[in-house]
Every structure is written in structure tokens, then in C-alpha cells.
Image 1 (cartoon, rainbow, N blue to C red):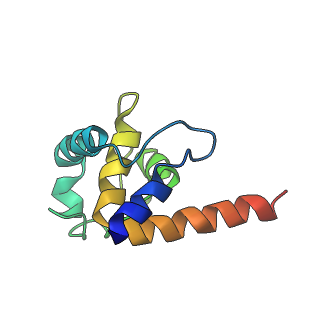
Image 2: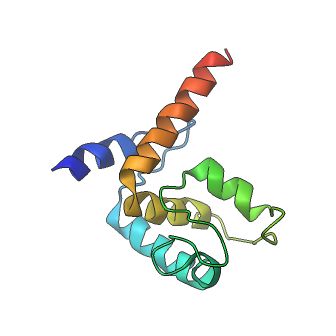
Length: 112
């Protein structure tokens, strides 16, 4: 039940994007993309390994990371794949994702 509430929050359009991050098909596709591109460094459940723990990452985290960081080479994903990976990672740790979304919204409000 507690996850239903969190997932309903995750289904809210984020930053004017119409993506339902709680969609089971999107989450399943995201798991496939994660397995292909992320698993080797971030581990089976995205808890880290050679790369950091990324459970609960939100779209802005993913879009920033795939551009490349000091620890990670850029990754080229097709349209829709960043959103799918995000849906999968959000499903692994919905409470973390919810907190990040609330902080992001508060920062956006504060910058107006």
C-alpha cells in the first residue's frame, strides 16, 4: 500500500514531461536497458560496485550521468531509454526518488 502512494506521486508529470514512471512496461524496459548499459558498474540492484549506488535516481540524475562524469564515460541512449532507466531505478527505491523529486521541485520554486 505504501508503494502505491509513492508510485502515484511518481506518475505525476515531471518538469513538463508526460512520462508515467510507475508504468510496469516502462520499468521492465528500463531494467533491460539498465542490464545492457549500467549493471556492470552499478551492480545487480543498482547498489553500487565499480560505480556508485544509483537506486532512486531521477531523470535529471540520469540525463546528467549519461553525458559523462569524471567517473563515467558518456553513454549514448536512444530516445525513451533514459526515461525507462529512470523508471526502473525509481522503482528500486521509491522513497529516495520521492525525496529527490520534492527537493528538485523546491529548488525550482525557489529559483522563480
